[in-house]
Length: 317
Image 1: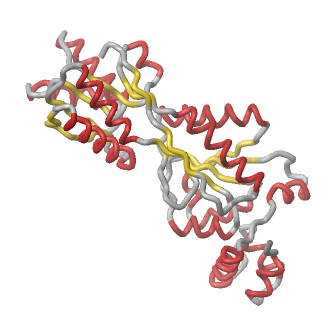
Image 2: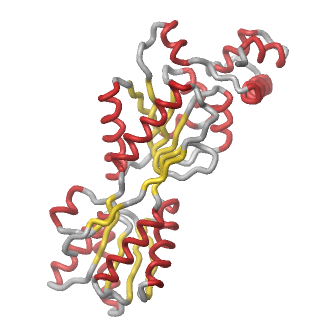
């Protein structure tokens, strides 16, 4: 296994310089730091962060860093509950950070902190940040997003779209609308494509495809527009929150259409909303478990990829 001495020899710098770079120090010329990180990555250097923390007497347990998105949705809270569930069972410590910590100007401070691995919650991480993390040999895992060359726990949203179309077909829907969320195309695109493909197989014509901001008020407004069209007899909402707005509109007109949501939030059971159960808790629990396995085994270069499927929850809607 490569050591700091090996990196220092190849880079033709002192051991102290290498140590400062790998631990997030900023008193090294950028070109030198870049050279050291590149050599560390090529050599497969991985510091034993658990041993380091014990030597420094900072912590005797594994600490995982959780990087949060700027906007936290209801589904994210369920993922976080899954993370806490695993950590409380295994005695793992958690440090939470906002997404700006992945900016190059902050990321070395993150690396220097007392964390042994990172979880990214529904985030896209740029190449520069990845390069720095890999150079520091800090394990990381994405929660919710499918990534080709990174460890991740992802959701097959296309499968969710399939199930939504099957549900509407069971309600004898012939002309459907898809109402997606404007701010999350990573989910919306496969969800819509899966819905479109299964709708074609079920002889459902998708006459409307639109996106709106999240919230029940937006669901109310778009439902009113679809109702006024007169040619839509079923709606797939890419969020339970949007479907709640549809219910409010239907109460006002004392009529309704078959609808299905996405997420299975707590209020959905009370409202008898048919929905797709997003396996949020499992994403958090399993993702944390896999990251801890990587940390303990020291298998940083191994890519762990697990894909989970939504489940159809059939209620009255």
